[in-house]
Length: 142
Image (tube, rainbow, N blue to C red; front, side):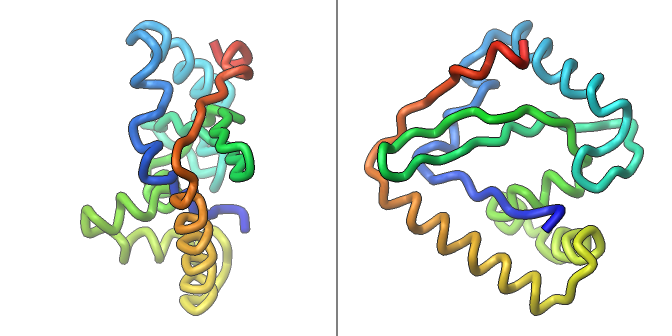
């Protein structure tokens, strides 16, 4: 899928760059992501005047490591899909599901199947007692 869900383990909700970096450092990271994107969402390719910075993490469940892999610029619609759990809590699932299906050219049944896989992955990752943060690749983004 071109656009997929990234459900962050519950204990990692506030382990993000914005909470770790100074405001000036975070601004530098997100502005670099916006410049690389050249005014287009890096997921769906739609032009956007207001992109959002998205941190992509890799999870090593065996060793309990949450590792920063990428900071990209995405449109609001893609960001709402990526963080579907938050979007559902805020009542925006209908719009997000429509965007998911449009970007991926898939049916509602395929959307539900992908969401089921993401939820299972989320449950599994939530069984890790504590995640260690690996920011070894942060230098690429500052």
